[in-house]
Figure 1 (cartoon, rainbow, N blue to C red):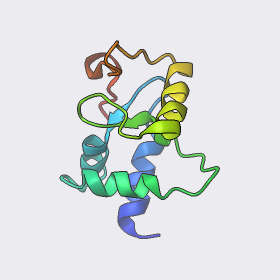
Figure 2 (figure 1 turned 45 degrees about the horizontal axis):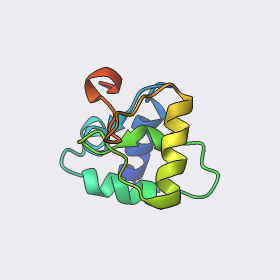
Figure 3 (figure 1 turned 180 degrees about the horizontal axis):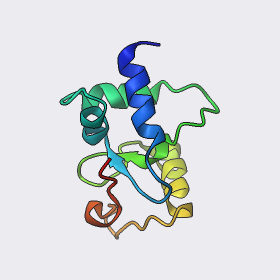
Figure 4 (figure 1 turned 60 degrees about the vertical axis):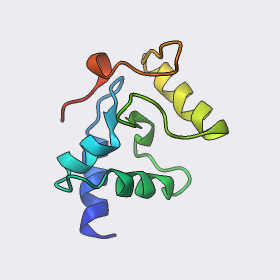
Length: 100
């Protein structure tokens, strides 16, 4: 595991229950401003059964970036934590965004 991976995982572990953060915020808080896509790639390749709260990371529009079954799995995990989605499937970043 390299420094980038360790820093990003450390930041994601800090996101509180019922809060979300964006890929861009995670990159910034980890000291890698501008590396949002790399954060997404890293999360996409998590091993099965990871305890990292990956589901709390969404895109900058307040949306889940995943599709299909993965989208449903992430949305369900967030809803269990009390995160509310509007009719367009967006999360209010004003209400739920973790500020690190």
